[in-house]
Length: 265
Image (cartoon, rainbow, N blue to C red; front, top):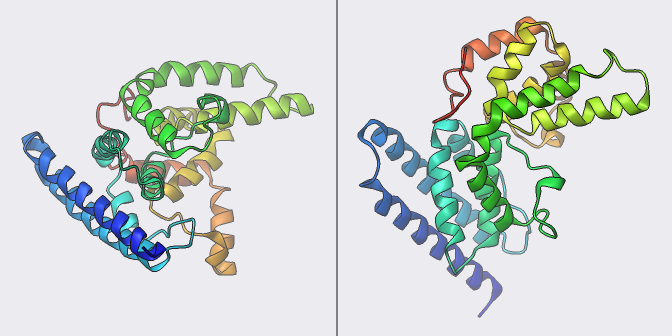
């Protein structure tokens, strides 16, 4: 059997599996989320078909493209993350593991949540493994995120213990590491971050700008942008406090996370 035929067969299996997951879960959806679930299922099915077509046409490439159908899913925001977590759990229990397709699923959740797992959080010997990352996302969604306020406050206290505008290389490295750990908490931490910005802490402005790019489904490959577009993106990293707060006020409702322990103000 030719490689391309094998790829197409695998893609069709994943498509059928995904459609089956849609049907078997429909009756369990609470009435208040039926419309949302129906919209998600429709967009997810469209993306599966588009992704499958792209893979079948590019069988020897190790990466997948960011398709319009994927951006449409990302634009639905955090409200659809529970549906993606369901799919992760089903895929983890599927003996016909499709690693190439799982990477694309993980990308959607990353774009929506910006939740990052630092290298020291991965199981030993599993860094970068798709299956391990799915398991980490499931555990984070069900358990880890409940500790977000405590985690944020601990990290911020560490940040505040450093000198303002650190000069030594050691303090600069510590500040960078702490800010990266805060950023790794993802979009769900934005209400906590915004409160610090309102209090005058400008260290978080570039972080908010970067999260905006992903949550706006604007995660395009930078090399494909014109010089003017590249400059605009760089300028955005120098947001003023007023610009960041205005964006947050306009978008905070769509960035609400289901079941979050963090209040949006």
